[in-house]
Length: 632
Image (tube, rainbow, N blue to C red):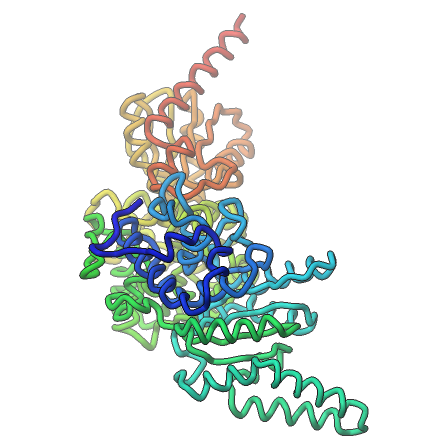
Protein backbone atom coordinates (compact mmCIF):
# COMPACT_ATOMS: atom_id res chain seq x y z
CA UNK A 1 0.00 0.00 0.00
CA UNK A 2 1.23 3.53 -0.68
CA UNK A 3 1.79 5.77 2.26
CA UNK A 4 -1.08 8.17 2.85
CA UNK A 5 -0.70 11.92 2.91
CA UNK A 6 0.11 13.22 6.40
CA UNK A 7 -3.00 12.89 8.54
CA UNK A 8 -5.06 11.20 5.82
CA UNK A 9 -7.51 8.57 7.04
CA UNK A 10 -10.21 6.60 5.29
CA UNK A 11 -12.64 5.34 7.98
CA UNK A 12 -15.57 4.77 5.61
CA UNK A 13 -13.50 3.63 2.64
CA UNK A 14 -11.75 1.05 4.81
CA UNK A 15 -15.13 -0.66 5.27
CA UNK A 16 -16.03 -0.73 1.56
CA UNK A 17 -14.70 -3.91 0.01
CA UNK A 18 -17.30 -3.92 -2.76
CA UNK A 19 -20.19 -1.82 -4.08
CA UNK A 20 -22.56 -3.95 -1.99
CA UNK A 21 -21.03 -2.39 1.13
CA UNK A 22 -21.42 1.06 -0.40
CA UNK A 23 -25.10 0.38 -1.10
CA UNK A 24 -25.58 -0.57 2.55
CA UNK A 25 -24.52 2.89 3.70
CA UNK A 26 -27.07 5.63 4.25
CA UNK A 27 -27.10 8.31 1.56
CA UNK A 28 -26.02 10.84 4.17
CA UNK A 29 -22.58 9.14 4.36
CA UNK A 30 -21.89 9.40 0.63
CA UNK A 31 -20.35 12.91 0.58
CA UNK A 32 -17.75 11.71 3.07
CA UNK A 33 -17.13 8.56 1.02
CA UNK A 34 -16.53 10.75 -2.01
CA UNK A 35 -14.08 12.90 -0.06
CA UNK A 36 -12.13 9.83 1.04
CA UNK A 37 -12.05 8.38 -2.48
CA UNK A 38 -10.72 11.68 -3.83
CA UNK A 39 -8.00 11.86 -1.19
CA UNK A 40 -6.99 8.24 -1.70
CA UNK A 41 -6.81 8.82 -5.45
CA UNK A 42 -4.53 11.82 -5.01
CA UNK A 43 -2.35 10.00 -2.47
CA UNK A 44 -1.89 6.98 -4.73
CA UNK A 45 -1.45 8.59 -8.15
CA UNK A 46 1.03 11.07 -6.66
CA UNK A 47 3.31 8.04 -6.19
CA UNK A 48 2.46 5.89 -9.22
CA UNK A 49 1.74 8.52 -11.86
CA UNK A 50 -1.09 7.96 -14.30
CA UNK A 51 -4.35 9.67 -15.19
CA UNK A 52 -5.59 12.06 -12.52
CA UNK A 53 -7.79 15.00 -13.57
CA UNK A 54 -10.44 12.90 -15.32
CA UNK A 55 -10.87 10.61 -12.32
CA UNK A 56 -11.10 13.51 -9.88
CA UNK A 57 -13.95 14.88 -11.96
CA UNK A 58 -16.15 11.79 -11.61
CA UNK A 59 -15.65 10.84 -7.96
CA UNK A 60 -19.17 11.83 -6.88
CA UNK A 61 -20.70 10.26 -9.97
CA UNK A 62 -18.86 6.98 -9.35
CA UNK A 63 -20.03 6.85 -5.73
CA UNK A 64 -23.63 7.60 -6.74
CA UNK A 65 -23.70 5.04 -9.54
CA UNK A 66 -22.46 2.16 -7.40
CA UNK A 67 -24.81 3.21 -4.59
CA UNK A 68 -27.91 3.30 -6.77
CA UNK A 69 -27.32 0.48 -9.24
CA UNK A 70 -26.79 -3.20 -8.54
CA UNK A 71 -23.36 -3.60 -10.10
CA UNK A 72 -22.05 -5.88 -11.53
CA UNK A 73 -25.50 -7.30 -12.41
CA UNK A 74 -26.34 -3.88 -13.78
CA UNK A 75 -23.74 -3.19 -16.49
CA UNK A 76 -21.68 -0.03 -15.96
CA UNK A 77 -19.51 1.07 -18.90
CA UNK A 78 -16.94 3.86 -18.68
CA UNK A 79 -15.96 5.42 -21.99
CA UNK A 80 -12.18 5.52 -22.62
CA UNK A 81 -11.35 4.25 -19.13
CA UNK A 82 -8.90 6.84 -17.83
CA UNK A 83 -11.73 8.21 -15.68
CA UNK A 84 -12.25 4.86 -13.97
CA UNK A 85 -9.69 4.97 -11.13
CA UNK A 86 -12.44 5.82 -8.56
CA UNK A 87 -14.41 2.90 -10.00
CA UNK A 88 -11.43 0.61 -9.34
CA UNK A 89 -11.14 1.94 -5.78
CA UNK A 90 -14.76 1.03 -5.01
CA UNK A 91 -14.78 -2.37 -6.73
CA UNK A 92 -12.29 -4.31 -4.63
CA UNK A 93 -9.05 -3.06 -6.18
CA UNK A 94 -8.07 -0.34 -3.72
CA UNK A 95 -5.33 -2.44 -2.13
CA UNK A 96 -3.70 -2.87 -5.56
CA UNK A 97 -4.09 0.66 -6.86
CA UNK A 98 -0.43 1.33 -6.10
CA UNK A 99 0.42 -1.14 -8.92
CA UNK A 100 -1.33 0.97 -11.56
CA UNK A 101 0.18 0.68 -15.04
CA UNK A 102 3.07 -1.46 -13.78
CA UNK A 103 4.02 -4.91 -15.03
CA UNK A 104 1.58 -7.45 -13.60
CA UNK A 105 -0.31 -4.62 -11.89
CA UNK A 106 -3.66 -2.94 -12.48
CA UNK A 107 -4.36 -1.54 -15.91
CA UNK A 108 -4.81 2.19 -16.34
CA UNK A 109 -7.96 1.41 -18.32
CA UNK A 110 -10.87 -1.04 -18.09
CA UNK A 111 -10.22 -4.76 -18.52
CA UNK A 112 -12.86 -7.46 -18.49
CA UNK A 113 -10.39 -10.04 -17.17
CA UNK A 114 -9.30 -7.74 -14.33
CA UNK A 115 -12.69 -7.44 -12.61
CA UNK A 116 -16.29 -8.54 -13.07
CA UNK A 117 -17.19 -4.88 -12.52
CA UNK A 118 -15.41 -3.92 -15.77
CA UNK A 119 -18.29 -4.74 -18.08
CA UNK A 120 -16.41 -3.67 -21.22
CA UNK A 121 -12.74 -3.14 -21.95
CA UNK A 122 -12.01 0.43 -22.92
CA UNK A 123 -8.99 2.41 -24.00
CA UNK A 124 -10.23 4.14 -27.14
CA UNK A 125 -12.94 6.76 -27.02
CA UNK A 126 -16.63 6.72 -27.92
CA UNK A 127 -17.35 2.98 -27.69
CA UNK A 128 -19.50 2.87 -24.53
CA UNK A 129 -22.95 3.57 -25.99
CA UNK A 130 -22.58 1.00 -28.77
CA UNK A 131 -21.37 -1.68 -26.35
CA UNK A 132 -24.05 -0.90 -23.75
CA UNK A 133 -26.73 -1.08 -26.42
CA UNK A 134 -25.43 -4.48 -27.52
CA UNK A 135 -25.68 -5.66 -23.91
CA UNK A 136 -29.22 -4.29 -23.66
CA UNK A 137 -30.20 -6.29 -26.75
CA UNK A 138 -28.71 -9.41 -25.15
CA UNK A 139 -30.64 -8.84 -21.91
CA UNK A 140 -33.88 -8.34 -23.83
CA UNK A 141 -33.31 -11.51 -25.84
CA UNK A 142 -32.67 -13.50 -22.64
CA UNK A 143 -35.62 -11.98 -20.79
CA UNK A 144 -33.31 -10.55 -18.11
CA UNK A 145 -34.03 -7.34 -16.25
CA UNK A 146 -30.96 -5.21 -15.69
CA UNK A 147 -29.74 -1.69 -16.30
CA UNK A 148 -27.10 -0.69 -18.84
CA UNK A 149 -25.30 2.55 -18.05
CA UNK A 150 -22.78 4.21 -20.39
CA UNK A 151 -20.75 7.14 -19.03
CA UNK A 152 -19.38 9.23 -21.89
CA UNK A 153 -17.63 12.60 -21.93
CA UNK A 154 -18.75 15.53 -24.04
CA UNK A 155 -15.49 15.33 -26.02
CA UNK A 156 -16.21 11.72 -26.95
CA UNK A 157 -19.48 12.80 -28.54
CA UNK A 158 -17.45 14.40 -31.34
CA UNK A 159 -16.88 10.88 -32.68
CA UNK A 160 -19.42 9.80 -35.26
CA UNK A 161 -19.64 6.36 -33.68
CA UNK A 162 -21.25 7.82 -30.56
CA UNK A 163 -23.99 9.47 -32.60
CA UNK A 164 -24.50 6.32 -34.64
CA UNK A 165 -25.12 4.48 -31.38
CA UNK A 166 -27.46 7.18 -30.04
CA UNK A 167 -29.47 7.07 -33.25
CA UNK A 168 -29.75 3.29 -33.12
CA UNK A 169 -30.60 3.24 -29.41
CA UNK A 170 -33.48 5.67 -29.86
CA UNK A 171 -34.96 3.43 -32.54
CA UNK A 172 -34.69 0.22 -30.48
CA UNK A 173 -36.36 1.64 -27.36
CA UNK A 174 -34.50 -0.65 -24.95
CA UNK A 175 -33.47 0.11 -21.37
CA UNK A 176 -30.31 2.18 -21.70
CA UNK A 177 -29.03 5.04 -19.57
CA UNK A 178 -26.42 7.33 -21.09
CA UNK A 179 -24.67 9.73 -18.72
CA UNK A 180 -23.16 12.67 -20.55
CA UNK A 181 -20.27 13.93 -18.44
CA UNK A 182 -19.91 17.51 -19.64
CA UNK A 183 -16.64 18.76 -18.18
CA UNK A 184 -15.81 21.58 -20.57
CA UNK A 185 -19.08 23.53 -20.45
CA UNK A 186 -19.17 23.01 -24.19
CA UNK A 187 -22.87 22.15 -24.38
CA UNK A 188 -24.71 23.70 -21.45
CA UNK A 189 -25.15 27.01 -19.71
CA UNK A 190 -23.80 27.18 -16.15
CA UNK A 191 -25.47 24.86 -13.70
CA UNK A 192 -27.52 26.44 -10.95
CA UNK A 193 -30.53 25.98 -8.72
CA UNK A 194 -33.02 26.33 -11.57
CA UNK A 195 -31.53 23.57 -13.73
CA UNK A 196 -31.12 21.31 -10.71
CA UNK A 197 -34.78 21.87 -9.84
CA UNK A 198 -35.82 21.10 -13.42
CA UNK A 199 -33.84 17.88 -13.35
CA UNK A 200 -35.60 16.78 -10.18
CA UNK A 201 -38.98 17.57 -11.70
CA UNK A 202 -38.30 16.02 -15.11
CA UNK A 203 -36.98 12.79 -13.56
CA UNK A 204 -39.73 12.48 -10.94
CA UNK A 205 -42.36 9.80 -11.08
CA UNK A 206 -45.12 12.41 -10.89
CA UNK A 207 -43.95 14.26 -14.00
CA UNK A 208 -43.56 11.07 -16.02
CA UNK A 209 -46.93 9.66 -14.89
CA UNK A 210 -48.66 12.87 -15.93
CA UNK A 211 -46.82 12.93 -19.25
CA UNK A 212 -47.51 9.29 -20.10
CA UNK A 213 -51.09 9.45 -18.79
CA UNK A 214 -51.82 12.52 -20.87
CA UNK A 215 -50.51 10.79 -23.97
CA UNK A 216 -52.75 7.78 -23.40
CA UNK A 217 -55.88 9.88 -22.81
CA UNK A 218 -55.32 12.07 -25.86
CA UNK A 219 -53.96 9.39 -28.21
CA UNK A 220 -57.43 8.39 -29.41
CA UNK A 221 -58.50 11.89 -30.33
CA UNK A 222 -58.10 12.56 -34.09
CA UNK A 223 -55.59 15.32 -34.87
CA UNK A 224 -54.63 15.84 -31.24
CA UNK A 225 -51.87 13.27 -30.75
CA UNK A 226 -49.32 15.01 -32.99
CA UNK A 227 -50.21 18.38 -31.51
CA UNK A 228 -49.66 17.12 -27.97
CA UNK A 229 -46.34 15.55 -28.91
CA UNK A 230 -45.08 18.75 -30.51
CA UNK A 231 -46.28 20.81 -27.54
CA UNK A 232 -44.53 18.48 -25.08
CA UNK A 233 -41.24 18.51 -26.94
CA UNK A 234 -41.17 22.23 -27.60
CA UNK A 235 -42.08 23.10 -24.01
CA UNK A 236 -39.28 20.85 -22.76
CA UNK A 237 -36.84 22.23 -25.32
CA UNK A 238 -37.56 25.77 -24.15
CA UNK A 239 -36.24 25.05 -20.66
CA UNK A 240 -33.57 22.40 -21.26
CA UNK A 241 -30.75 21.99 -23.80
CA UNK A 242 -31.72 18.43 -24.65
CA UNK A 243 -33.81 18.86 -27.78
CA UNK A 244 -31.25 17.01 -29.91
CA UNK A 245 -31.26 13.99 -27.63
CA UNK A 246 -35.05 14.03 -27.39
CA UNK A 247 -35.24 14.01 -31.18
CA UNK A 248 -32.98 10.95 -31.18
CA UNK A 249 -35.50 9.18 -28.95
CA UNK A 250 -33.96 9.72 -25.51
CA UNK A 251 -35.69 11.02 -22.43
CA UNK A 252 -33.31 13.83 -21.53
CA UNK A 253 -32.70 15.00 -17.96
CA UNK A 254 -30.33 17.78 -16.93
CA UNK A 255 -28.02 19.48 -16.79
CA UNK A 256 -27.26 18.90 -13.11
CA UNK A 257 -24.28 19.45 -10.85
CA UNK A 258 -22.10 16.36 -11.17
CA UNK A 259 -20.35 17.10 -7.87
CA UNK A 260 -23.52 17.07 -5.75
CA UNK A 261 -23.65 13.43 -4.72
CA UNK A 262 -27.05 13.74 -3.02
CA UNK A 263 -28.58 15.27 -6.13
CA UNK A 264 -26.97 12.59 -8.29
CA UNK A 265 -28.37 9.81 -6.10
CA UNK A 266 -31.92 11.19 -6.12
CA UNK A 267 -31.87 11.81 -9.88
CA UNK A 268 -30.38 8.40 -10.68
CA UNK A 269 -33.00 6.70 -8.51
CA UNK A 270 -35.75 8.47 -10.41
CA UNK A 271 -34.19 7.61 -13.75
CA UNK A 272 -33.70 3.98 -12.73
CA UNK A 273 -37.47 3.71 -12.37
CA UNK A 274 -37.97 5.00 -15.91
CA UNK A 275 -37.82 2.75 -18.95
CA UNK A 276 -36.40 3.04 -22.45
CA UNK A 277 -33.45 5.18 -23.60
CA UNK A 278 -32.58 7.90 -21.10
CA UNK A 279 -29.83 10.50 -21.03
CA UNK A 280 -28.63 12.27 -17.90
CA UNK A 281 -26.54 15.36 -18.56
CA UNK A 282 -24.18 16.26 -15.72
CA UNK A 283 -21.66 19.08 -15.55
CA UNK A 284 -18.37 18.37 -13.81
CA UNK A 285 -14.95 19.93 -13.45
CA UNK A 286 -11.81 18.06 -14.45
CA UNK A 287 -9.47 17.87 -11.49
CA UNK A 288 -12.25 18.79 -9.06
CA UNK A 289 -11.19 18.96 -5.43
CA UNK A 290 -7.45 19.29 -6.06
CA UNK A 291 -6.37 22.85 -6.71
CA UNK A 292 -3.37 22.19 -9.02
CA UNK A 293 -5.49 19.93 -11.24
CA UNK A 294 -8.39 22.37 -11.24
CA UNK A 295 -6.01 25.11 -12.34
CA UNK A 296 -4.49 23.12 -15.21
CA UNK A 297 -6.51 19.97 -15.94
CA UNK A 298 -4.64 19.41 -19.19
CA UNK A 299 -1.26 19.12 -17.46
CA UNK A 300 -2.79 16.93 -14.74
CA UNK A 301 -4.64 14.70 -17.18
CA UNK A 302 -1.68 12.31 -17.22
CA UNK A 303 0.96 12.83 -14.55
CA UNK A 304 4.31 11.55 -13.42
CA UNK A 305 4.71 11.06 -9.65
CA UNK A 306 4.21 14.37 -7.85
CA UNK A 307 4.22 16.00 -4.43
CA UNK A 308 0.54 15.99 -3.39
CA UNK A 309 1.02 19.01 -1.13
CA UNK A 310 2.30 21.23 -3.95
CA UNK A 311 1.43 19.41 -7.16
CA UNK A 312 5.06 19.60 -8.30
CA UNK A 313 5.83 16.69 -10.60
CA UNK A 314 8.95 14.60 -10.86
CA UNK A 315 11.19 15.65 -13.73
CA UNK A 316 10.83 13.69 -16.93
CA UNK A 317 13.72 11.99 -18.67
CA UNK A 318 16.36 14.32 -20.03
CA UNK A 319 16.77 14.49 -23.77
CA UNK A 320 14.72 15.49 -26.76
CA UNK A 321 11.61 13.47 -27.41
CA UNK A 322 10.49 12.46 -30.88
CA UNK A 323 7.29 14.42 -30.28
CA UNK A 324 9.28 17.60 -29.62
CA UNK A 325 11.31 16.98 -32.78
CA UNK A 326 8.05 16.93 -34.72
CA UNK A 327 6.84 20.04 -32.90
CA UNK A 328 9.94 22.05 -33.82
CA UNK A 329 9.92 20.82 -37.40
CA UNK A 330 6.25 21.65 -37.92
CA UNK A 331 6.74 25.22 -36.66
CA UNK A 332 9.83 25.71 -38.81
CA UNK A 333 8.09 24.49 -41.97
CA UNK A 334 4.96 26.53 -41.21
CA UNK A 335 7.16 29.62 -41.01
CA UNK A 336 8.59 28.83 -44.43
CA UNK A 337 5.60 27.32 -46.27
CA UNK A 338 2.15 28.96 -45.91
CA UNK A 339 0.55 25.86 -47.40
CA UNK A 340 1.22 23.71 -44.32
CA UNK A 341 -1.96 22.89 -42.42
CA UNK A 342 -1.73 20.93 -39.16
CA UNK A 343 -4.60 18.59 -38.29
CA UNK A 344 -5.06 16.50 -35.16
CA UNK A 345 -7.96 14.53 -33.65
CA UNK A 346 -8.02 15.97 -30.11
CA UNK A 347 -4.32 15.34 -29.48
CA UNK A 348 -2.82 18.84 -29.53
CA UNK A 349 -0.60 18.35 -26.49
CA UNK A 350 0.18 14.68 -27.01
CA UNK A 351 1.14 15.16 -30.66
CA UNK A 352 3.27 18.25 -30.04
CA UNK A 353 1.19 20.93 -31.75
CA UNK A 354 0.81 23.40 -28.89
CA UNK A 355 3.51 25.75 -30.20
CA UNK A 356 2.20 25.69 -33.75
CA UNK A 357 -1.38 26.28 -32.58
CA UNK A 358 -0.27 29.43 -30.77
CA UNK A 359 1.96 30.75 -33.55
CA UNK A 360 -0.26 29.83 -36.51
CA UNK A 361 -3.81 29.46 -35.16
CA UNK A 362 -5.34 29.92 -38.61
CA UNK A 363 -3.44 26.86 -39.85
CA UNK A 364 -4.12 24.57 -36.92
CA UNK A 365 -7.22 22.35 -36.79
CA UNK A 366 -8.20 20.20 -33.82
CA UNK A 367 -11.20 18.31 -35.17
CA UNK A 368 -12.07 16.58 -31.89
CA UNK A 369 -12.20 12.84 -31.40
CA UNK A 370 -12.98 12.31 -35.06
CA UNK A 371 -10.10 10.47 -36.70
CA UNK A 372 -12.05 9.61 -39.84
CA UNK A 373 -12.99 13.23 -40.39
CA UNK A 374 -9.41 14.35 -39.71
CA UNK A 375 -8.08 12.26 -42.60
CA UNK A 376 -10.78 13.05 -45.17
CA UNK A 377 -10.73 16.72 -44.14
CA UNK A 378 -7.01 16.67 -44.90
CA UNK A 379 -7.67 14.97 -48.22
CA UNK A 380 -10.00 17.79 -49.16
CA UNK A 381 -7.33 20.37 -48.39
CA UNK A 382 -4.79 18.41 -50.43
CA UNK A 383 -7.15 18.53 -53.43
CA UNK A 384 -6.80 22.32 -53.35
CA UNK A 385 -2.98 22.32 -53.23
CA UNK A 386 -2.56 22.79 -49.49
CA UNK A 387 -0.07 20.62 -47.58
CA UNK A 388 -1.90 18.97 -44.67
CA UNK A 389 0.07 17.21 -41.95
CA UNK A 390 -2.00 14.82 -39.82
CA UNK A 391 -0.48 14.47 -36.35
CA UNK A 392 -1.93 11.32 -34.84
CA UNK A 393 -1.04 8.38 -32.61
CA UNK A 394 -0.53 5.06 -34.36
CA UNK A 395 -3.28 3.41 -32.32
CA UNK A 396 -5.76 6.14 -33.29
CA UNK A 397 -4.89 6.07 -36.99
CA UNK A 398 -6.40 2.57 -36.99
CA UNK A 399 -9.78 4.25 -36.56
CA UNK A 400 -9.40 6.05 -39.89
CA UNK A 401 -8.16 3.19 -42.02
CA UNK A 402 -10.74 3.41 -44.78
CA UNK A 403 -10.25 7.15 -45.09
CA UNK A 404 -6.49 6.72 -45.36
CA UNK A 405 -6.96 4.07 -48.04
CA UNK A 406 -9.95 5.35 -50.01
CA UNK A 407 -9.85 9.13 -49.59
CA UNK A 408 -6.08 9.73 -49.55
CA UNK A 409 -4.12 6.90 -51.15
CA UNK A 410 -6.57 5.94 -53.89
CA UNK A 411 -6.47 9.54 -55.12
CA UNK A 412 -2.71 9.78 -54.48
CA UNK A 413 -3.15 12.96 -52.47
CA UNK A 414 -0.30 14.83 -50.84
CA UNK A 415 -1.04 14.18 -47.16
CA UNK A 416 1.75 13.65 -44.63
CA UNK A 417 0.99 11.43 -41.63
CA UNK A 418 3.13 12.16 -38.55
CA UNK A 419 2.45 8.98 -36.60
CA UNK A 420 3.47 9.21 -32.95
CA UNK A 421 3.59 6.42 -30.32
CA UNK A 422 4.65 3.79 -32.86
CA UNK A 423 5.76 0.54 -31.27
CA UNK A 424 5.28 -0.33 -27.61
CA UNK A 425 4.05 2.54 -25.42
CA UNK A 426 4.78 1.33 -21.90
CA UNK A 427 2.27 1.98 -19.13
CA UNK A 428 -0.68 2.66 -21.43
CA UNK A 429 -0.49 -0.97 -22.47
CA UNK A 430 -2.18 -2.95 -25.19
CA UNK A 431 -5.01 -0.50 -25.92
CA UNK A 432 -2.56 2.17 -27.05
CA UNK A 433 0.23 0.06 -28.55
CA UNK A 434 1.25 1.28 -31.99
CA UNK A 435 2.33 -2.10 -33.26
CA UNK A 436 0.22 -2.60 -36.38
CA UNK A 437 0.81 0.46 -38.56
CA UNK A 438 3.54 -1.05 -40.74
CA UNK A 439 1.26 -3.99 -41.52
CA UNK A 440 -1.94 -2.06 -42.15
CA UNK A 441 -0.31 0.76 -44.11
CA UNK A 442 2.23 -1.22 -46.15
CA UNK A 443 -0.44 -2.94 -48.23
CA UNK A 444 -1.95 0.37 -49.40
CA UNK A 445 -0.83 1.44 -52.89
CA UNK A 446 0.81 4.88 -53.17
CA UNK A 447 1.56 4.99 -49.42
CA UNK A 448 5.20 5.65 -48.53
CA UNK A 449 6.38 4.57 -45.06
CA UNK A 450 9.47 5.88 -43.28
CA UNK A 451 10.86 4.72 -39.92
CA UNK A 452 13.57 6.89 -38.30
CA UNK A 453 16.27 5.29 -36.18
CA UNK A 454 16.84 8.34 -33.97
CA UNK A 455 15.58 11.87 -33.37
CA UNK A 456 17.95 13.46 -35.89
CA UNK A 457 16.77 11.13 -38.61
CA UNK A 458 13.17 11.79 -37.55
CA UNK A 459 13.46 15.42 -38.62
CA UNK A 460 15.07 14.45 -41.91
CA UNK A 461 12.31 11.96 -42.62
CA UNK A 462 9.52 14.38 -41.77
CA UNK A 463 10.92 16.79 -44.32
CA UNK A 464 11.47 13.99 -46.85
CA UNK A 465 7.85 12.84 -46.48
CA UNK A 466 6.54 16.41 -46.63
CA UNK A 467 8.41 17.07 -49.89
CA UNK A 468 7.16 13.81 -51.42
CA UNK A 469 4.24 14.58 -53.80
CA UNK A 470 1.93 11.91 -52.45
CA UNK A 471 0.78 10.21 -49.25
CA UNK A 472 3.61 9.46 -46.84
CA UNK A 473 3.71 8.16 -43.28
CA UNK A 474 6.53 8.76 -40.78
CA UNK A 475 6.24 6.59 -37.66
CA UNK A 476 8.22 7.33 -34.52
CA UNK A 477 8.08 6.09 -30.93
CA UNK A 478 7.03 7.51 -27.61
CA UNK A 479 9.73 9.07 -25.45
CA UNK A 480 13.22 10.40 -25.93
CA UNK A 481 15.82 9.34 -28.45
CA UNK A 482 19.48 8.46 -28.02
CA UNK A 483 20.66 12.05 -27.87
CA UNK A 484 21.45 12.49 -31.55
CA UNK A 485 21.95 16.13 -32.49
CA UNK A 486 18.91 17.40 -34.37
CA UNK A 487 19.43 19.97 -37.10
CA UNK A 488 17.19 22.93 -37.81
CA UNK A 489 17.30 22.92 -41.58
CA UNK A 490 15.18 21.35 -44.30
CA UNK A 491 17.49 18.64 -45.57
CA UNK A 492 16.03 15.40 -46.90
CA UNK A 493 17.14 11.79 -47.35
CA UNK A 494 17.69 10.03 -50.69
CA UNK A 495 14.31 8.53 -51.55
CA UNK A 496 14.01 4.83 -50.83
CA UNK A 497 17.66 4.35 -49.87
CA UNK A 498 18.93 2.35 -46.89
CA UNK A 499 22.32 2.86 -45.23
CA UNK A 500 24.93 0.33 -44.16
CA UNK A 501 26.10 1.43 -40.69
CA UNK A 502 28.37 -1.53 -39.96
CA UNK A 503 30.17 -3.92 -42.30
CA UNK A 504 30.54 -7.48 -41.07
CA UNK A 505 30.26 -11.03 -42.32
CA UNK A 506 28.03 -14.04 -42.01
CA UNK A 507 24.96 -12.22 -40.70
CA UNK A 508 23.24 -9.09 -42.00
CA UNK A 509 20.78 -7.36 -39.68
CA UNK A 510 18.23 -5.17 -41.48
CA UNK A 511 16.86 -2.81 -38.82
CA UNK A 512 13.71 -0.74 -39.31
CA UNK A 513 13.34 2.17 -36.88
CA UNK A 514 14.74 2.72 -33.42
CA UNK A 515 15.71 -0.92 -32.85
CA UNK A 516 18.77 0.01 -34.90
CA UNK A 517 20.48 0.81 -31.58
CA UNK A 518 19.98 -2.79 -30.43
CA UNK A 519 21.07 -4.06 -33.84
CA UNK A 520 24.36 -2.15 -33.51
CA UNK A 521 25.11 -3.82 -30.17
CA UNK A 522 24.31 -7.26 -31.54
CA UNK A 523 26.31 -6.50 -34.68
CA UNK A 524 29.39 -5.66 -32.62
CA UNK A 525 29.14 -8.94 -30.69
CA UNK A 526 28.53 -11.10 -33.76
CA UNK A 527 30.65 -9.13 -36.23
CA UNK A 528 27.50 -8.79 -38.33
CA UNK A 529 26.63 -6.29 -41.04
CA UNK A 530 24.03 -3.80 -39.81
CA UNK A 531 21.76 -1.85 -42.15
CA UNK A 532 19.56 1.10 -41.21
CA UNK A 533 16.72 0.40 -43.65
CA UNK A 534 14.98 3.78 -43.14
CA UNK A 535 12.24 3.10 -45.70
CA UNK A 536 9.69 0.33 -45.24
CA UNK A 537 8.06 1.41 -48.49
CA UNK A 538 9.58 1.87 -51.01
CA UNK A 539 11.97 -0.84 -49.85
CA UNK A 540 15.61 -0.61 -50.91
CA UNK A 541 15.34 -3.87 -52.81
CA UNK A 542 18.73 -3.63 -54.45
CA UNK A 543 20.49 -3.49 -51.10
CA UNK A 544 18.28 -6.23 -49.66
CA UNK A 545 19.18 -8.58 -52.53
CA UNK A 546 22.85 -7.72 -52.13
CA UNK A 547 22.76 -8.51 -48.40
CA UNK A 548 21.04 -11.83 -49.09
CA UNK A 549 23.67 -12.85 -51.63
CA UNK A 550 26.63 -11.79 -49.48
CA UNK A 551 25.55 -13.28 -46.12
CA UNK A 552 24.58 -16.66 -44.74
CA UNK A 553 21.71 -15.31 -42.65
CA UNK A 554 19.47 -12.28 -43.13
CA UNK A 555 17.80 -10.92 -39.96
CA UNK A 556 14.97 -8.38 -40.11
CA UNK A 557 14.27 -6.37 -36.98
CA UNK A 558 11.21 -4.18 -36.34
CA UNK A 559 8.97 -2.93 -33.51
CA UNK A 560 5.81 -3.98 -35.29
CA UNK A 561 3.95 -7.27 -35.45
CA UNK A 562 5.79 -9.78 -37.63
CA UNK A 563 2.69 -10.56 -39.70
CA UNK A 564 2.67 -8.30 -42.73
CA UNK A 565 5.36 -5.98 -41.37
CA UNK A 566 8.72 -4.83 -42.68
CA UNK A 567 10.19 -8.33 -42.49
CA UNK A 568 7.38 -9.57 -44.68
CA UNK A 569 8.32 -6.91 -47.23
CA UNK A 570 11.86 -8.31 -47.30
CA UNK A 571 10.55 -11.88 -47.71
CA UNK A 572 8.36 -10.78 -50.61
CA UNK A 573 11.25 -9.03 -52.34
CA UNK A 574 13.47 -12.11 -52.05
CA UNK A 575 10.73 -14.40 -53.30
CA UNK A 576 10.00 -12.14 -56.27
CA UNK A 577 13.71 -12.19 -57.17
CA UNK A 578 13.87 -15.98 -56.88
CA UNK A 579 16.44 -15.88 -54.05
CA UNK A 580 16.10 -18.67 -51.47
CA UNK A 581 17.86 -16.90 -48.62
CA UNK A 582 17.90 -17.90 -44.95
CA UNK A 583 15.83 -15.25 -43.21
CA UNK A 584 15.01 -14.70 -39.54
CA UNK A 585 12.13 -12.24 -39.02
CA UNK A 586 12.26 -10.65 -35.58
CA UNK A 587 9.41 -8.43 -34.45
CA UNK A 588 6.50 -8.42 -32.07
CA UNK A 589 4.68 -11.72 -31.48
CA UNK A 590 1.04 -12.46 -32.22
CA UNK A 591 -0.18 -11.47 -28.76
CA UNK A 592 -1.30 -8.30 -27.00
CA UNK A 593 1.44 -7.26 -24.59
CA UNK A 594 0.05 -5.69 -21.44
CA UNK A 595 1.21 -2.59 -19.59
CA UNK A 596 4.78 -2.46 -18.33
CA UNK A 597 7.78 -0.26 -19.08
CA UNK A 598 8.76 -0.11 -22.74
CA UNK A 599 11.94 -2.04 -21.94
CA UNK A 600 9.94 -4.73 -20.14
CA UNK A 601 7.53 -4.99 -23.06
CA UNK A 602 10.39 -5.48 -25.51
CA UNK A 603 11.81 -8.18 -23.25
CA UNK A 604 8.42 -9.92 -23.16
CA UNK A 605 8.51 -9.81 -26.96
CA UNK A 606 12.01 -11.29 -27.04
CA UNK A 607 13.53 -8.10 -28.44
CA UNK A 608 16.06 -7.01 -25.83
CA UNK A 609 19.62 -6.85 -27.24
CA UNK A 610 20.57 -10.03 -25.36
CA UNK A 611 17.51 -11.88 -26.63
CA UNK A 612 18.09 -10.74 -30.21
CA UNK A 613 21.66 -12.03 -30.02
CA UNK A 614 20.52 -15.37 -28.60
CA UNK A 615 17.87 -15.80 -31.27
CA UNK A 616 20.35 -15.02 -34.04
CA UNK A 617 22.90 -17.46 -32.60
CA UNK A 618 20.20 -20.15 -32.36
CA UNK A 619 19.26 -19.55 -36.00
CA UNK A 620 22.90 -19.91 -37.02
CA UNK A 621 23.23 -23.20 -35.12
CA UNK A 622 20.03 -24.51 -36.68
CA UNK A 623 21.20 -23.46 -40.13
CA UNK A 624 24.60 -25.04 -39.62
CA UNK A 625 23.04 -28.30 -38.45
CA UNK A 626 20.75 -28.37 -41.44
CA UNK A 627 23.68 -27.85 -43.82
CA UNK A 628 25.68 -30.67 -42.22
CA UNK A 629 22.71 -33.02 -42.41
CA UNK A 630 22.24 -32.20 -46.09
CA UNK A 631 25.94 -32.93 -46.80
CA UNK A 632 25.73 -36.24 -44.95
